[in-house]
Image (cartoon, rainbow, N blue to C red):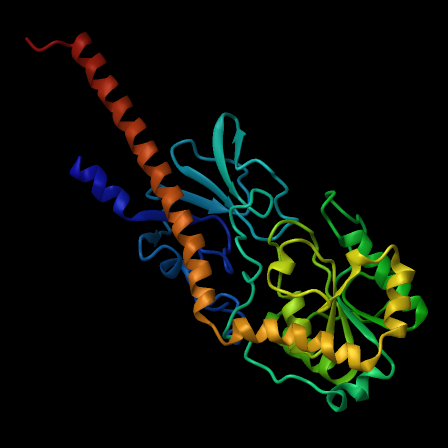
Length: 349
């Protein structure tokens, strides 16, 4: 019994792929992007020191990856992805050849617990409120920037915003008010196709462009699903650009009404551009400052980030501990049954 307890005190985890930006990363920062703060919690932080990374697949309790092509029936097989398009399962447990695979993703609602998952204090510092004079240089032409690759297949689920975002971007481009930066856009729609391999450099360039030239940032998420709020809206505010966002119930848990421009409040795409065309600079400043107020709330309370991630980590630790205990108990039952059978077949003389 003591041996079983000792074995579950530390959960040995083997990663099947690069799990950076997840609770299973062994690095606080991306080794290929040392200036990035996006991975500033690693496996020891998430698991309170009880998650132990191992390169030995045989010795591991848990095998985790973005997918499982050949799940191991002797292990706890886990899928973890915070990217909406990587795994589209709505079921927290999948079965492959009778082997259970436990799924942590957006749609199973076991990763995102608040709107501030991507608000990382080391990347987002408090910023000043603005006045009319601060934004007049870029408000007069009301230009919009969108940074996103083109997805030819459009929307993979009914919750996806990809097709709508792309339709809106093309409409704005045709009006001459919206610029696109991203890969794979057809017919030269993008003013720039390059995408720097380092996230920190992409973010830095985006912030610089927004602050210098753009009054608005088209910041639709890839997917409109519960508590999925990526860095897009925070990047827009950091760049002093009013976000054009697709609103939902959970975003308004943080943001007040009449802060970001909510596309969900418009009947169609032309109605949105008509509103922007008639928006006054005073109203613009008022909306942007409301967004900055929310941004600064999280920037000035960095402990919230740790509390949020700790809650996710504790839930994960609790779930994996239960699964490992369950597996060990099943193994013990099988072991006992084996010895009982062996004793009946080969009784002691």
